Image (cartoon, rainbow, N blue to C red; front, side, top):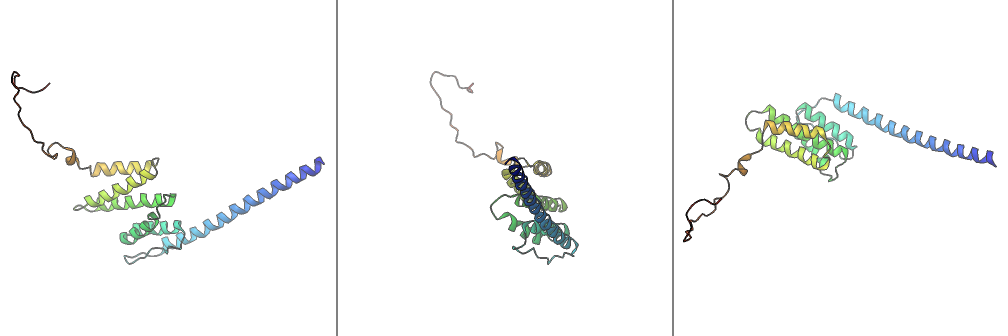
Length: 183
């Protein structure tokens, strides 16, 4: 009886190990396939008329293509690729990486332009803030947002006293009291 139980336990453990090995093997195969597709995208020449990956493609492949388009200077096509990844509503790691890359793309464009760069900086800062709302522990996004805030500080005019609406002031005379400022 003991020998039979030990063999049964060993058989079950062996089957579990085989199952784990098969799952890891399938995941490795999918990853290798995805890596070859990404390598083809990186090797392909990218022009301004480039298109994004189809929506049926894996999200990682769409992210890689949007990144390649951004690096190649096809910012409009990259924006479409990032937008398709972000608009899903959920903030999975691929969408978070897309937000990070989109924010950095806007910041790079803003640094490349001398005049009229403020809207690009604001878009980049907003994308990084969106990412930090979803993943507050992302230190790379915090660092890039801090750098963006140093390059293009927030507009403090909205908080200054001159910009606040003037309140109506009246002098009131109260008999028996000396006019003066209140303590």
